[in-house]
Amino acid sequence: MTSDPVPHPGASPAPLPVSAAAPRLRESLASTGSFYDEIGGHETFVKLVDVFYAGVAADPVLKPMYPEEDLGPAKVRLTTFLEQYWGGPTTYSEQRGHPRLRMRHAPYKVNPDARDRWLAHMRAGVDSLDLAPLHEATLWDYLERAAHSLINTFEE
Image (cartoon, rainbow, N blue to C red; front, side, top):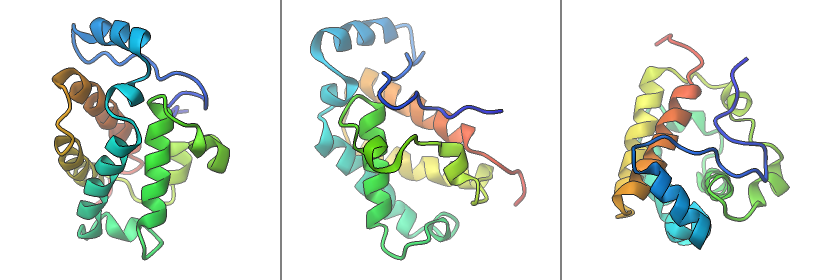
């Protein structure tokens, strides 16, 4: 059984081994607040998700994975999920329960091509944020691990 790349709702995110500097980030977060707060809170995650979905909207592989014509509801789901994961409001769990990422993605063919496209659009979103290098590395490490964990087929 593969576990989701997220903790139980309400739990703190697991430490992310992104570099030798990671302990400094954990110390900084312990003294100043959550990663969510450190990188700018709600507005930062909205920008990340908006840039990401601008790419998805034009992607012939990913767009069909979104059953709603309007990507607005998907934007809200991803924003609230990421906010909760990184220490922000728990709106995602309150509205949708446990994230169960693998289960929620099971109906879709998530192969390496889909993963790579997802990561390319997410990379554009991360790059738009102008985060401090350690924050960027921490966020990107999680996004890469999450994307790799959701592969459920190697079929084309």
